[in-house]
Length: 355
Image (cartoon, rainbow, N blue to C red):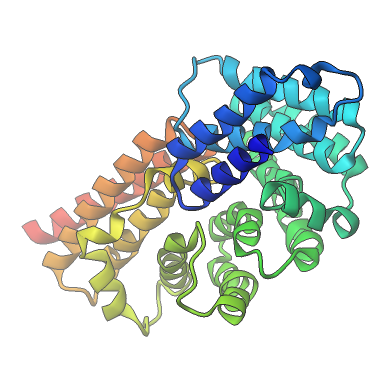
């Protein structure tokens, strides 16, 4: 019972973006388990430990657990989870363990092995019969999210067609069968999809997808005042998609976008959100930095404001790049590419000023 209390405490703290306190709760649960004699008996219910492994992995991604460059803590955690879940012979937990293993392999640069791991997941994952149980055990469908992570693995290997095909599969096969009330899960499923679409000239389609699959269902079930872990990211992403998709057209809410971009407090984001979501795709701060960048590109904005905006974009994207060092490789490459574009625009604006 005490173990379950600590697990519940860990989940609640993580949902409140209090990663370090969540890590302590999960670690307390694991410590109790290690000192419980019956845990080593053959008929012990191993499933008790699975939410602990998953929770520790989650806070690890948030960046609140330090480990060496080789990721020995993460590798060891994964090894324990996969073996215990395999012995337990339950596809719900075994699928979660394999998904965790795939992320670990990818973080170590072993993308081919991570994709091979996904093939094993495909052989046991049935969203229609497992989705509810996975969400109940882990808060969201961590198994289905393995497909979202694989978008980045394919990007890393230069397999754009495979990445786009996976995006299509997630949108058409996984999201429609997922609980629409679990906005956090849907966002995790779609974040890498939205970023990929935006980077392949489908920004407006990505915006429509985000509104229809995440924002509208959330407001229907919880109201516009409701709260969820990733909600601070929604408005800036929608702004970026609007401006990127309408670069040569008038923007209806440009004054609102300017107010947001010129307010320094807009970029204050909890580090656990930056760390957690920077392990799904670009870091949230990279998305935030693109708001002032796209505003600075617009000629109807006053030149002095454009110069201020581009400086803000550069500062925030540099912070994103620094944060991305602890995230997935895609987050780092994304920030690097965007910094180059931002600096090029900054140079262009300086030239306009000098003339």
